[in-house]
Length: 376
Image 1 (tube, one colour):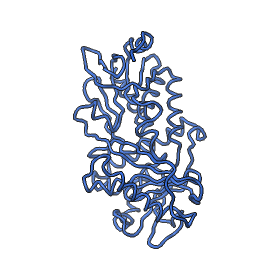
Image 2 (image 1 turned 135 degrees about the vertical axis):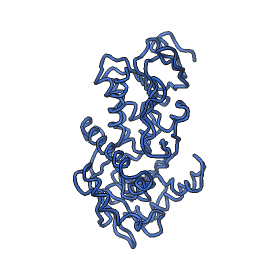
Image 3 (image 1 turned 60 degrees about the vertical axis):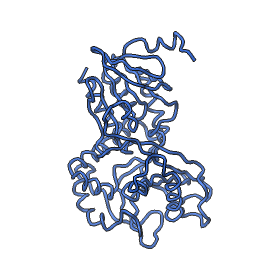
Image 4 (image 1 turned 90 degrees about the vertical axis):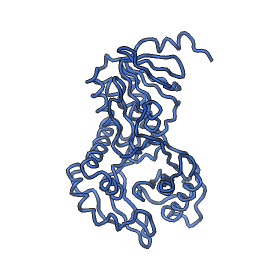
């Protein structure tokens, strides 16, 4: 279908800043830009309509880390960068709570912790003896001991240990995304859904953007497509991976409330009322070098078995088939440090959030907005 004059005219004026990606990161950056410099002309381009690859397809867990994920990251990178990242997650969650009333995004603090059980890949012997060490490092961020050993809130079974997280929450990702969309539009930002950014080229002082619709120009371009950023940023150390998520019907559902982590963050579960949500399990295929999309059945089978064995506590009946199942996509790389930098003159990146967009995006959006303004 050809574009009308009216439709193309929406793109005709040059923008000060164009953001590619209307997920949490892109929208939060747009918001802080518009609030700080309301005179700027800002546009957000989003390929999808309603759905977002990560922001509306995650588990809705407002968390900063589990003990096994934290220690594994420390062994890979050392304490300094890991603590910086955890602080960004902590500050991001606090800022999100300041911006949005709890009832608007269904935010609530819940019991939370990491479950250790017999025969797992990331076993307790590797981590429990380092809880005191981790608490000492995290105190400057969280204010007091964050981890403690406790009885599992979903019932005790032989060989199980739980490490409690002092503070963790749940949100409704769809409602948070809608709140961001409304907030950004109310501050005068243009959001074009169903428009894909295909390429960009610097000419003189401006950046020309070719899209699936009309082309447009801008002084600065920010790529916030997370896992898909490598398509627009040549050589970016980020690639897309997928997480499967299942939600079971409330009938004969769970009789516990809270967030559960296992296997160094690769498995996560929570309640949605009496519904059970469980997802992740990429760890069972990463060692095999399996590519994106080639491990669906293996992961599905693993998650169903895990839910049946450890999570399904209310009914003695066999675990039913999930009522909802979907795949979320996230951006990862050789390290978990987010990619926030000027990639080429006038072209910036905010991506590689490694599945922590709920926690990181508000803080990083504020930080990125300041960086773009400084560069104008």
